Length: 182
Image (cartoon, rainbow, N blue to C red):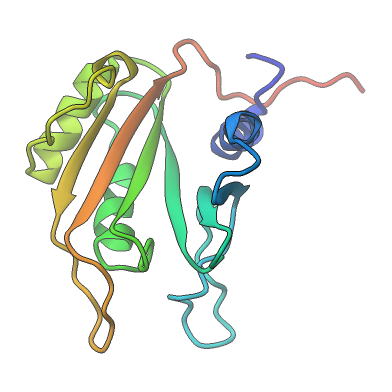
């Protein structure tokens, strides 16, 4: 295992380092900043509930309530998609995640197998066709799909919802806990 990733909490370890890498390239004058694990208070249930937290989000400086979120999932193989798909269906498409924006991202950290096969399986399991792919996206395993969201009564959250799917290959990365010297 790469010493940069902690196998005890692989998803958070990768996401934390990804957030720092993104932050390094965001210009200082950008109207947003990137944040690891920000809370979504717009959809927080009554106390004593805790607000949902995104794995990472791009937060609008002018109104920090507005966040463009990214949720990450470890994918052991191109077929191991249950948790990934559940976040789309149960969080994004119910407006629990990304209520104030019309899109968000799912990040798949693929440990074994093909990124293309993973994307094909995601589309099939969601029952969607991916939208036209921007130039260069094929090389980085990025697709997007459009869905109708269920907006809660009394809310004017945007619908439809565009979900970006980005699959990162981490082939050969072991999940075991690193052996640290005592």
